Amino acid sequence: MKDLVRPVVAGNWKMYKTISEARNLAAEVVKQAPAPSLATIILIPPFTAIQEVKKTVSKSGILVGGQDLFWEEEGAFTGEISAIQLREAGCDFVLVGHSERRQFFGETDEMVRKKVQAARQHELRPIVCIGENLEDRKNGQTLNKIKSQLENGLFNLPEEEFRMVILAYEPIWAIGTGQNATPEQAEEVHNYIRQLIASRYGKNVSACAIILYGGSVKPANAFSLIKEKDVDGFLVGGASLKAESFLEIVREASRSKEG
Ligand code: 13P
Image (cartoon, rainbow, N blue to C red; front, side, top):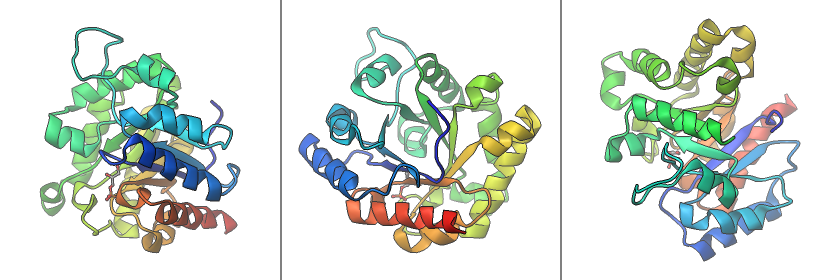
């Protein structure tokens, strides 16, 4: 896959949308989406709707991702989904290490590492989520948390594989709360992530890395966040469930290109 056009805006639909609802939402997004030369749009529906969404967006330039995967290729792992299965259903991307997976399903940095490797073995581009909780932030541990998640979950990858990873900074206290990080708070962490990438993989890789912000992104705050130097796009939850608000965010994000 060639380099992605920035901004990159991904909609994580979480456990919302039946197949028919997903088809309707994807069709609305296709109808009103800006040209692929202005932004990369990735839709991330629940597993059951991936194939239908893929069919609906085909020829539009809109891309599709899964919300999780298991690291084995196949086997007796009830309830799990493999990279091969996601590929065949139409995914080019997969979320890994979302804080809801870490919080409710016990996902660790070690599991994130295995999932990222499995994704890469099958040409899926992982969107790896990292971020601190409120306690970390209050205790001044935000950057330490980010560093350990990157070092334990990702920095083992060889350079050519790391280049295929998208990062998503999602402060847990900002997810679904209506309280987004301020542009300054987001930039501080994004810039720190870029510095860590530079010291592990070099300046060139770090400059190319795509770092998304997620956590209560809305049409009203998207432009102020995207204006920050190290914010390359968004991972949107709640506001991605309606075509209108999702596309408004995409439009606000692509305004940043107009200078
Ligand atoms: P909200 O946009 O609903 O805060 O969710 C963010 C998120 O978790 C995206 O993965």
